[in-house]
Every structure is written in C-alpha cells, then in structure tokens.
Image (cartoon, rainbow, N blue to C red; front, top):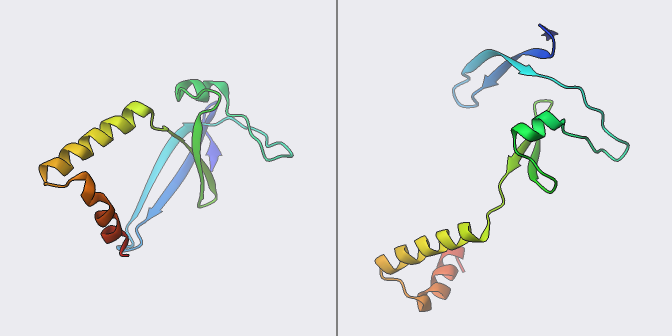
Length: 114
C-alpha cells in the first residue's frame, strides 16, 4: 500500500468467494483523510464527506468491521409515508388473495410455527 498523488490512497482489494474460490483483484483510488479517535471512541466524519453523503446531525449509520476495515454506511430510517405506502400495498395484496382482517391472527401463528 502506498500513496500516489496528494490525498489519494491506492489499495489492492482481494475478494474471495467462499463457494468457488474466485478471486477478484482490483486497484482503486480513494481520497483519504486521517482522523483521530477520542478517548471515548468517538470520531468526526470530515465535513466534505458529510456533505457529499447529505449527512446531518442525528443521521443513522450502520457500522461493521470487515477484514480489518471499519465500514460506516448511511441508512435511511423509514418515514410515516413509507410505512403507509407499504401498508396500503400489503392490504391491496391481501384483499386480492382473499384474506380478511380476521385471518391475521391465524396467519401470524402459522408463519411463526406456533
């Protein structure tokens, strides 16, 4: 691993498939900014990164560790309109297959295997 040009980090990534042992190697360039973790384990995401991802105070991020990397992925929390849209879609489907509201308790038990 080394530096090429100002502010760019070149890394060789190897991805292995568990089943086929297929390896894909790819050289990518990505901007790197060095950040410091506080004694409480907190970090500050640089402003340009926050802006490019439209992150605001209170934004939710999924965090996971993979092969020595910490990955932060912004996640969208559904809003009420999203829930209502999904509920309406589910209700239309249930009606189209003949389910009634009184069938719900039995379907839940059946699905849960109880």
